Image 1 (cartoon, helix red, strand yellow):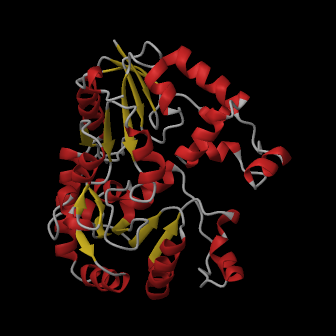
Image 2 (spheres, rainbow, N blue to C red; image 1 turned 45 degrees about the horizontal axis):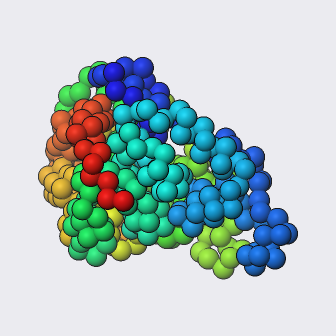
Length: 368
């Protein structure tokens, strides 16, 4: 049985010959733990949250390690003791272990670094740590502009790297799937996701056009009223409360919805492949999604046959209206996307394929 430290997945005693375990670094830092007055005198600022420091990137991790922060050093010690003899360590969220520690104290496990929030965090959470890992994975086939991620990562390192589709949990497949499954739906459009400034701007435009025909859900701050509070900052408001959904509620509304709207953090054609990109087709919705750099979105779902892609929000509105009035076309694309998901992107075979790839990396590839 190979032992694996892996994040974003529940612990599993036996996953096809792999034992999966996880680790919570934030448990070592009390909420509100901050640097104090002495830090202000030395660094020029006070009150910086240490919990945020270990997730924000290399600078925070480096500072905690160099200053030998007691909580951080205790966390490192426990991590080393627990995982020193494991076969794999997969940082599938963010790396919180200083690279010097990885290279010196964790030599036995094969170590794989995840690039998961790119291009925004590439030079904060990815590139500075890469030298201490044996390999890497990326969730977006595109990086920035027209550069494929595979080409970009080859410029940063000669370590092996692979694309791992972002499907961390199994979606529920309906018991009966026939032609009517893709047609008998009473919700026009749905979007489920957390807010960012540009995403809310785009949702304002969509909500203004579709009104009650689009359902928007997610974990939005201030009990779902963050859209109103934007006005205090001089930004256009989203004048609706946004509520979160349980997993059961999400599945139910997805099965009722005709079109799943998707967008990424970038407001330019950069990254692609967030979780919604798999959720929508997996539940029988026709996905309308923003494009990626180098047309990398078509690597995931074929344009015009398994999904429909847009350049601007205005174009997305036109596309949605077109397919809401073309039931046969919409149902045909929804079914093709559904079949593609359940053929190529189910979480279990993808996870197993990734673990087998990671296990094949030779530890001698480390370039210290």
